[in-house]
Image (cartoon, rainbow, N blue to C red; front, side, top):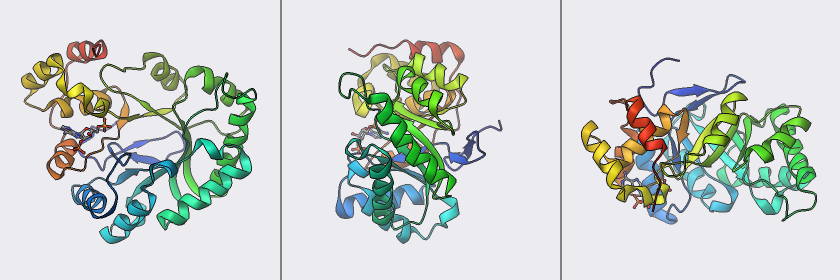
Length: 274
Ligand code: A2P
């Protein structure tokens, strides 16, 4: 793969769809003007990949910011997710229409199952996951979405889903940051050509106080946040940092001018957060 040089550069999924390599997360993005300003700043800084979800409540704001930006639709990459209350084929199909309407779009680039139904919480969990997945397969076949995937799925959730699927998940979006390296899920996804996306790549701010990360970052002349995002990229994951602060939004997009050495990558892999 060619060297990534900006947040606009794309990583290819197995079906040929390109995903801009750093996305802008919108979980907990403030509502109203502050949210619009943050999204406007992100788009001005070159972010083209916007991650939202039915449950975040940010779809209307994302839709408006995208329209206001004037960026061509084909240059944008928009993800949303079906929420837990809408699992199952029919309900997921309806949830998708709701997301499109709130976003004011006529297709999505990526649609994800937000969380797996799980053993203990749902006696029919495998069947529930398959039914939700059927809806996503239909949407993909009908051209309503360019790619489909899951979020927060571990190997034990992915395997039964994949055994029954016609179209395999192309993406798995998981919590991933130093201190939460998710070795098992990442290596399973690597083996099955499922691209990993990282939610909370800064551990929702928690990793920023790590003395070890601050030390390593100082050697590269980057901030701890940039180190975390670069670590995700070098571990083949697409980070989705969220910020409502203009300077941090720009900072998080500038992660292409340095390489973390193998030795430092391993030290970061092994970090344990207190
Ligand atoms: P803020 O919105 O005030 O910038 P994550 O993406 O891991 O969920 O982390 C989001 C949290 O990290 C938010 O609280 C955000 O706060 C903060 N944050 C985002 N980018 C940076 C940065 N470059 N430096 C410090 N804090 C950041």
